[in-house]
Length: 186
Image (tube, rainbow, N blue to C red; front, side):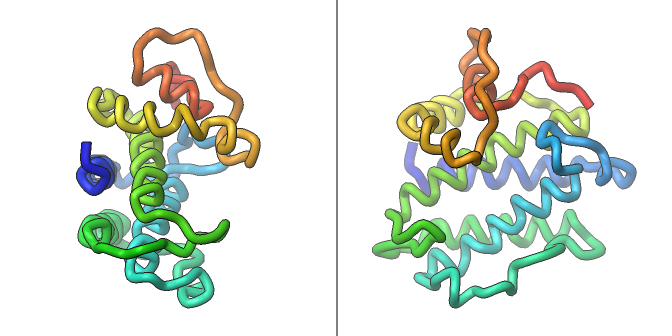
């Protein structure tokens, strides 16, 4: 699957899930122990808002602290929808390198990182609000293939928890590799 399509499909799915969040669900717990629903959505919206300047060639220093704090405001659904649309457009830009916190990166690698985060956090959000948690098999396959070569880097840096094992379904195996228990319930 083309990396821009992979990115955009995961971003669109996350945005659809945000539209399903009920008014009383923003403080619900998520599989991310330190985040409630609003904090999870804010994190992903932050990634989407970062995508635009980074895919324009800007550096972390150029952006500064302008994307720190609450990015959802009084209308989290609208904020998420706008950020998703902008990130989808930005993903199609042609750029030589993306300037990330750890150094310069290939834009396709950056988009795969974002796609993985959107896919996994989409499951987190769906599980938290009681929505459909099924992951599209083609997205699972694309992310799992990429992640298999990076899992230890993610784990050793503390970006993901310990693996949860014992699953045969590819989606559950991917969630487990990211430290999620596919049986999680709020």
